[in-house]
Figure (cartoon, rainbow, N blue to C red):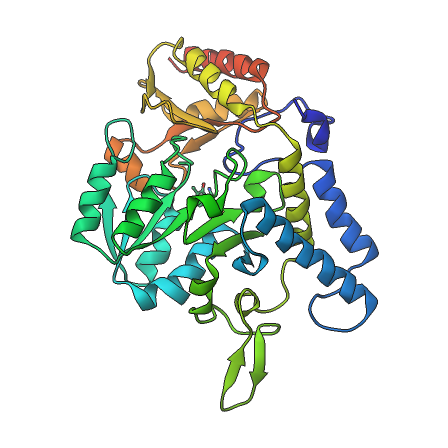
Length: 384
Ligand code: PMP
């Protein structure tokens, strides 16, 4: 199951089920980054020397690879540190200046809540149904009351794996003169994303959750919108002209890439995208297998019966603290995540302070799920 592509697993029997936090990296990504450091390490978009030109070429090839992957134009891809920075950039450079209200769902990650609060924007929250889904009629009613707002919604929930109907959400948002961002942090590794077909105004991802390096991601934006936006940060590489009286800036995407970028990571990101294109994503079967097996455990609490789920599954065992399970499983070399998963509002709504979460990647196997369920049962026996 592609495990041989990931050197992390070469000399370990660790079962790694915390892929929603970050994935392991395939050899091709590590090689591309070392190749840059070993053979053509230099800064981009600056000098006229050959090494710099090679680094610039490789960096810009990464932008093209991403643009092709998402079916958009090269100049609509801005490299950022990841989803969090993408959303902060948008909040500061665009939403703050054009909107009073941001519409979110109850399921959002903190990085799709705090950037709006930090800009003093008014939040309107879409309540979820009992299976943690967005009811499109409820969404539309909110938009009727708050037309010309900014909407920002996750594609896949990192806390409960719910896949939101983003195409419909985008369509409805546009009917009410809203602009919309989709937080694709969890979607990149699990779903084929065609931004042209979706017609999203903005889309944000992090490379590290899809077999790429940490510290890099991107923000997609429709070019006309990006063109209307002021810079997020000032510094080298993003200017047209500078004087002490007045400065002018480059066109997007360079306007938004101030200072030396994470060059090796961008190059690694490109390889991760090439890797994603080469694999068959098979985790859907794993998730329903894990759910079936979990339901065999006594006192299991699942929080949704939704079938539109991908990537992760969250649960608790009645009467047992989620963290105790996490600690005991770690001792058995099984790495899973416990806690609120940076989604405190939904935890509060459910009246809990956290869950146990299994999250999958292409190297996850049914045997690993079997071992994990056995280990959970053993931990429960010890804790009772
Ligand atoms: N949104 C979602 C749904 C996420 O799962 C995460 C990461 N857990 C983020 C945003 C933030 O991503 P990053 O930390 O890579 O910026």
